Amino acid sequence: MNAYTLHPIGRVESPLTDRAAAPRQPDEGAPDAWLVFDDRYAPALEGLVPGTDVLLLTWLDRADRDTLTVHPRGDATRPRAGVFATRAPGRPNPIGLHTVHILAITGTRVHVRNLEALDGTPVLDVKPLLHERG
Amino acid sequence: MNAYTLHPIGRVESPLTDRAAAPRQPDEGAPDAWLVFDDRYAPALEGLVPGTDVLLLTWLDRADRDTLTVHPRGDATRPRAGVFATRAPGRPNPIGLHTVHILAITGTRVHVRNLEALDGTPVLDVKPLLHERG
Image (cartoon, rainbow over all chains, first blue to last red; front, side):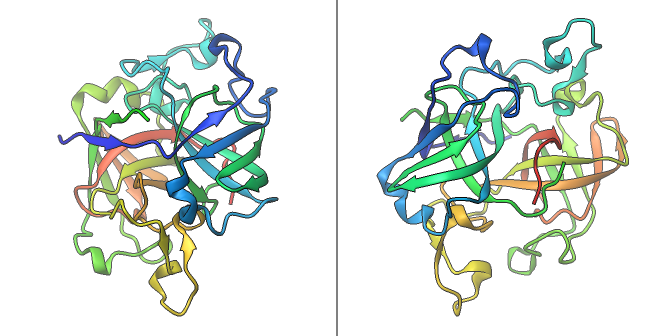
C-alpha cells in the first residue's frame, strides 16, 4: 500500500518532558500547554474560539510503531489487548487524539487546558467536536 | 520541521465511489462499509467487540492539502472559516475522524455502520471512545 507524508503544522510547548512520568489521560494531572503553530497556518486558525473544546491530533513521535498488543495501562497483571482496542501510544500510526479546552489564542499560539502530550510533540490537525462521544 | 511517514493498515470497502455525491456526515445517508485490514495487524484487532462504537482514523487521500480556508459545507453564501474550525476534508494533514458502530468482525474484516469515506480510503488507526464528546 502507498505511504503518505505528514507535515507537522506546529509543536506542543509543555512542562511535560519526562515520558515515564507523563500522565496517561488528561484528567490524571496533565498540565496546561501551548500549541505553537507555524505562521503560515494562521488563516486556518480563523474561527477557533477561546472557551470552547476542540479535537487536537498530534504525532506521538516517541512511540514504538511495532507494538501490536499491550497490557492495558502498562499493568502486567491485565491480559494483553490489541492496540486498536486501547489508547496506548505505541501503534502502527501513533496519532494522538486529545479533546482540549481552548483557554486563549494569541496570534498562532493557542493555550489549552490539561494536555497529556510531551513538550515538542508535533501537531497535525485541529477539528471541531461533532459526533464524538465517549 | 521533520516529516513523518504514515503506513496504511488497511482500506475501506464501500459502495461510495463518487466524491461529489458522498455524504458529508455519517447521518446524511452514509452507507455501511467494510474495513479490510492487512493480515499482519490481526493481533492489534484483538479486543474489538461487535455492537460497540469506536473511533476510526483514515487518510483522505483525495483531499487538497493546500486548503487553509473554506466556505463551510461548500456553501458560498457562508463566510470563509479556517479549516481547523471545520470538518472540511481539505486541510494540511487530511486525517479523517469517524465514530463508527461495529456490526461484525470476520478475521481482519470489520463491518461498520454509516461510514462517509470513499471506497479505497486508507485506514490509519482505530481507537476506543474515551473522553470525546460533541
